[in-house]
Length: 421
Image (cartoon, rainbow, N blue to C red; front, top):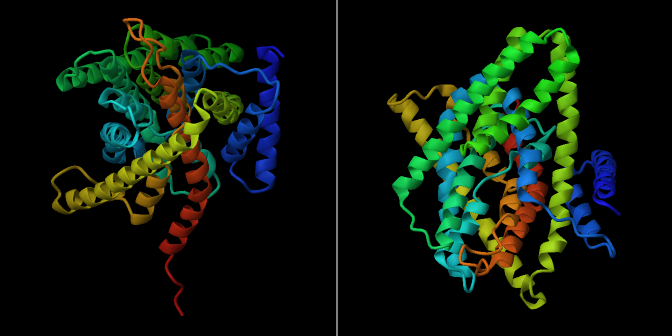
């Protein structure tokens, strides 16, 4: 079976399982991942090797563009304090927390390797959270925060990963250097996204009477923007986000209603296929990475992944509740521009905390670990880091995914006021 046949087979399975998941009232990502694991262990099935650069190019641009295009910018701006806290501050705190846990838990784990593991698992994936909570009646505020976090946190995680891998190779880590590089990547990515948005707007106005040309340019734009930004060594993630935000504004102002509807239908189909493919792909990778681990050590590493997952969840919960308190204090003291709409309830803090699942970006950058160092030596504990990362991704999506709807319902029920007699 060649690669094209395998991809078509997976897409067909994914579409069918999505229908089944809806019928049995089970979150589709959970069923798709379980199916992917089962398919991966099927005898005779060829291993699917993931090229992390191709995965990031195929999946990240359309998913980020769609999220940025459809996000409510006003609500995003209102909650920018919380979003930036989660997408930047919490990413680095989580990377450090996981590094500490990994260093003291895992035999043979050095500090540089522990920080590589922490960087891989530092960013959350809103695709999983939004897919699982779809139809559960989350507030618009909560959805915007979860989606807004995912628009930025991948860039933070990729920067942390870059410096951690360099440290393994023997490079010294200077925090001011890291901060300057991070600021440069964000600023450069934003500039590329704004410029590409202007260019795309000009092109679309020139061909606005040709609907096929308009659709084609809009579909190609996220990929071109991402590639251009990466070639310029700035953040492709931020570039695509800025493009999506600019195109959302332009679409509302300039595009006729039928063009907007047609674009929405096309993007919904693309995002549906990509989301489903992501979750099956995550499941398919587990048997592959498991074969690289000594059978006698597998359950030990599963245990390490579980403890690291719990540590990351506790860090997220602590930071969210701290953010809730800080926002209330700032609003009361009127020291900063914190409006009442930006305040968080206990229910929102809990749901956002529990929505911190890991996904395709963590898996891709784990698999993208170099096989050798610059001196030709094998990358230390490469298989173990990939295995722990994959198990942690599975644990967050399946474990938190199964319990998240229950938590949402409990929080929403607790928030309802009793009826007056």
